[in-house]
Each structure stands twice: as structure tokens, then as C-alpha cells.
Image (cartoon, rainbow, N blue to C red):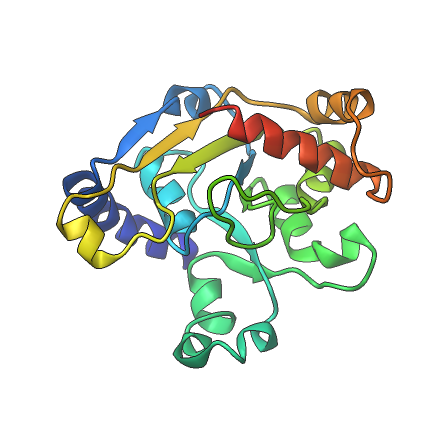
Length: 222
């Protein structure tokens, strides 16, 4: 189902973003160099981010569909009308599966995504864990580092710019330019080694420290 859903959304979203938001895609050749499955790590500036990343990959890319992380359906219960589509069946259709929070065990929390990796599928994670605005930094979650470390999967860093607080009015008036940049692939050694060389809050575990380094590398794509 995610394969059908994502490829169906690919054309309309790419055309809309190109016409009304002057969509610019940079560095997609870096994705083409990765032969096996990969992890995608991106900043999170809008609810459109997951499908925008999908639309920026080639339509026949071996890396589609992407599988995402989300919170449990009950988490969205207080979001008004959005609770109808957030979580549950709709999210599963678009390839988003819940992370089990509060377990203090990455393997259990990310059980769905570990299964997908073992099946050769591609995972996309927003390490911030929530939408953040430009210049806002939050404590990165360590899940991406955990998933990258054991199977030594390549990490594709992605920076999305220009999508913050985008409204239909802004886009129809052509007031935004959206840029999506794919960086050079990184590996777990690149972020874990650097995590030992920089001063990061000591209360974070090794996975969170490595994720913080990864987020810095993502923002350096600007």
C-alpha cells in the first residue's frame, strides 16, 4: 500500500511544488549512488515533509517507498479534526508506523522499522521528533543512530528549506521558494566518532549524541 500511495502522490505534489513554490532539488545524484537500502534523516519543518522527500526522489527510484516513524494514534487525540487522519490506518497507508515510546529500549521501540530494514526497505526519520522552525534546535532523538549502527546502513542527510509555515495562499501567490538538498551519504562511524570530539550535554546517551552531530551535518547543507 505505501508504494501505491507514495507513487500516486509523487506527480501531483511535485508538479504543484514546482509550479507554485519554485521547487529546487539538489544533490539527488548522491541518492543514486546508494545501491542497497538506506536511512534518510531530515530536518522537520512542515507536515508536508514526508511526502515532499518522496516527491524529490526519482519516480522509479529503488528507494521508494520510504517508511516513516510516528507516534501512537492516541497521541493525536487532542489535535481536533486532525486526529481523524493522524496515526492509524491512514498513516500505515503512507508508510508511517508507530514508535513505542517510554520503553527505554531502542530495539523494542523501533521494532517495526528494524523489521523493515531486515527486509531491505528504506526508512526516513526526522531526528528532532517534531516540527521545528528555522534556527530552532531541539534535543535529537537517538533512534536514527541506533538503526544505522548495527547494520551499518548509509544515512542520507536531507535539508528542507522554505517550507516553514507554508500556506496555500503563499504558494498560490508564488511567495515561497522551496529547496530540498540531499547530502553525501554518511555512516555510523562518521557521526559516532565526531560525537566524541564535540562537547554535547553529558546527560545524553551515545545514540543521542551521535544524532545531535547528524543534525548539525544536515544544517550544514544550507
